[in-house]
Image (cartoon, rainbow, N blue to C red; front, side, top):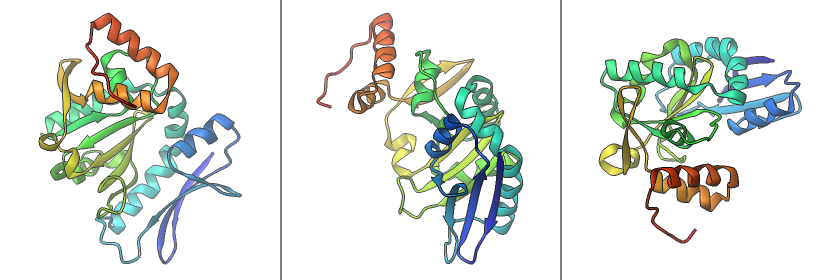
Length: 230
């Protein structure tokens, strides 16, 4: 597999070529890369964009994506997340970063038998760009300010211990504006996505394997699930 980046007059482009595995193709597209005749690309518009990305940032991504891209995508097939999350948690707590666990990794942290592809992290908006500076050797995509034109205002990516981290931030997702559960994991008190919200999301998506795993967790822990229309 070949992973590299290049620039045009308007865009910063991440490319993946020589992928000879159908499962890898699936996870690369899951990571929002677009399939082309030559492989896969992800385009970051740059012209006239005051998005917080410097020339130094782009040089950093070029080096890290070439070095870590294959490891990151292959890691999505097995996602050995525990050690990677522990390293991230240790660093963030050492530096006073406020962050929250989102998506299926919140289920895995609870002990639910769900296998995530990656780790979804929400960072308080005031701390978003600090993450880039804490993990410079792990930054594999630019940390950008989307200015409200995407699902979340801020987004970036790390590859830490071979695991893909999606790092997002938005005012609506800050702790003071969003409902998280507290959960003790490996000695750390974490904020993780609300279980009721996660369960009803999976019901709405009709993901039978995840629903079954969550229902087993509900039964074992005697959780009272609020019924809603999905």
